[in-house]
Image (tube, each protein chain N blue to C red):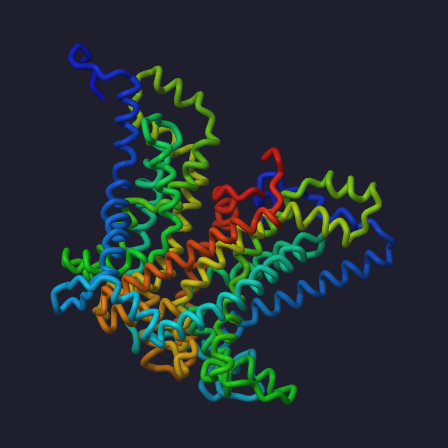
Length: 297
Length: 304
């Protein structure tokens, strides 16, 4: 579960200053809060339950009224059936490959630039930083048409290059987050290394990167999820079926077989599961991401 | 790097500057090739007629003139997008805030609830879209089945002219958890002593909420407001996957129309001018929000 201490730098355990009224009133308030929370949880969680439940049902139960929540019997066949209609293993592999390129860019290239912005003095550096921050505000769509023409010129259409090369050269959002983190690392360690004559590249690699592991994990997860979920990029730059990503393949699957709800829900479940696993393994990094964006908390 | 020193030596400052530029180089190359170059090219392309198969031709303002005077789909897609933004954004901010306020209470199982509310926001958008097509399915979908059990005949949702946009908004609101976490972080950053001081002054709960929580939270609310306006103007994937712009183009949003002009009709110059119109519109709207912010956003004199 998302841990309390991770939320915001000065999160406080005493959250509710006014919980000291009369006992009865307090009881009612607590009861009301619990009720609203439970109601909200039902609304937010039911779609998932419905998805998994449908993926495990035979057709006659899928189209039953009133709706059946617990499949009887459990049918696993929808999961292998997906592979008959769509080469999910291929989509999975393609998506993973692209996502790893994004993670590489976030961890190495972005941290290199972030270190430059955080620690190295150079004329015009702050101006360049402002330019980079404003880059974040340009909608992707403004670049999309010329990018397509550029990639067509380079004969990159229907390859993974348009989806990997730009990301491997760095993404401003991650550079920004890492810079914020580097600024919090005390300088003494690096100063000692500088006096010993270590190069900046070496300091970045052997001192700063190990210290920045939590922040690197955060940007790694963010970039992985972005690549895993991205739809617009693959839609525009990929054409052949065997190069599709999960998003694109799933969309094509639904477009062609709109009524096969059992296999469709099985496919959605398979696409969502890795993201949920990443989330449960690394929850605190999701919350850390908020602190790193510099939103005042 | 170099251990032999006698020859031409850079000053320390110059060497540091050079190192800095080298560290920034990969991003800089990407920025020139894949950002600033395309942005400029897109601006120029907006004044051209270029349909890939024929050579590009300078047409001046013709694209813009056609968009504003002769293209019904332009106005319609902008109208659909405005509908989406104007309905989605307020609900989004309000739901995120209400959920965060709920989670900021002391109650059993708070961590579980926080996770449950957050998780839908990280679901891959295509997987979520397909799931919602099934939930909104008129005959056997979850929503209409449930409504039928209490005797209400649900609408056709994605197949209905009236309900297609609300259906997409409903699905998007399911993902309000990310904004909720941001508001929650904001709430937990409100110093306790302000509440205590207000209580000593005799402020009741509502007054404390109104005069402590809201002002202290306003920078956070402003932040999610600005971001969700920018994001919802670019709504694309859910409409592409769930409705394809239909029925009767009732979900033809601006980005979807732009996509069709560019990548279905290969009308690159026209699409580039559309992209610039969106860019300028969103930028102007953001600046207006910043102007209005001074009226309701409270910034502490000294930032901690």
